[in-house]
Length: 563
Image (tube, rainbow, N blue to C red):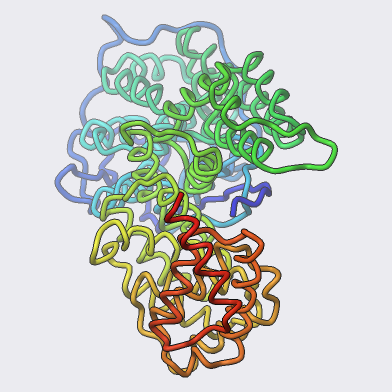
């Protein structure tokens, strides 16, 4: 659980084909616009309205800004070097599709745990009809070649805009007001930027800047400079990109850190640079370094680590960034909290992380799903049915991709919740059935320790097992009994008592494991509870241990009772 790799997320939202658009220079337009009542495109009547007066308030003008590069012009609805690249001065051929929007998540220069593709649902916020509407809005914005049309779309549906809708709208407005020669049409731009809808659009974009990736931030910066918005807007846009570059460098430093103190010094010196990816990586690295014995590295005291004021500052950043985190970041944070046994008082933080995980489950890989549930179970938190339903749906879709650790961790979590709440976690029954079948068909790849955990979880869940399934688990575990710790050993024997029959009790595998448990009990390496579980299993299976084995187990049991 919690392996460390880097990844880059690439998200592509493909737009549909657009109809023929008006000729260059045409003043009265009737282009598609999405109504707030329907996601379908319909004629936009207010596109024919005259331009607003430049008088009164509005965003003020300053000096001209630099042009966008041709390479960058292929993203977020940017025109290329063809006839469409000139904004409203160009002409789109009949039946030509609007530009495809490519979103490259480079927010942290890579994050832990893998590389994967993310579908449209991860680009557009919200679910169901809202997500569908945001996709339609993106298509309409990207197809618009007149800035008045973009403003009309925002005027009707601005409340439904996602961060990508907002930055694309501002960018398309700037492109449409730029001539083929790269010059801003200042007179027309003055009317557009003075429009109250444009002001609201910019403010809405500013509120969602933290959710933009590098391409979105680049588009925002270019548009603000091209439209010569007030200096504070242009300064903030430039600063966001500089911080992003610093965050990428910081990410590498966090990954290379070899002790907790190095990470704490980064928090002291660069707290303002940390983004959501840096935060999740930092706490993941702290937990790994503080709970893993690494040769040549000083062993850390986990309790001292979580009481350090810099870790407290890091946790404040986790609370702030948690609602924005992707599933990889959420799983990293939860894994870290579980490893550190962090006291999540009240459970508010865990609720926020669980809500983020539920929202991002459609892009989750098996290890993310299992880590989230495992960590929540370790922390004693039972999630709401929304997360459990989302995990169950995704787990069933990706069941063939579950590896042994993923299956063991998710079944263990379900078993813990089954013990706390009779009836089990909502939606778990089918997941347990599918994943246990996956495990039983691949037992040869499971370690004895994983087999012991599998047997315990299935016993706790009272899951029906095929004939000979328990015997196969026993045989694999008994092949290397020394690789079982005492807890796993006694749990496995107890599980056989719950699920097995007298035939399992007289099997050579059970007798081998029983002898191992008795030997450890004789040396004081089996606790009172473990000895009680083994003795109960022998009684349930009608197995009579050898005298010396029975004496050793009973002695441990009576020692515990006497204590």
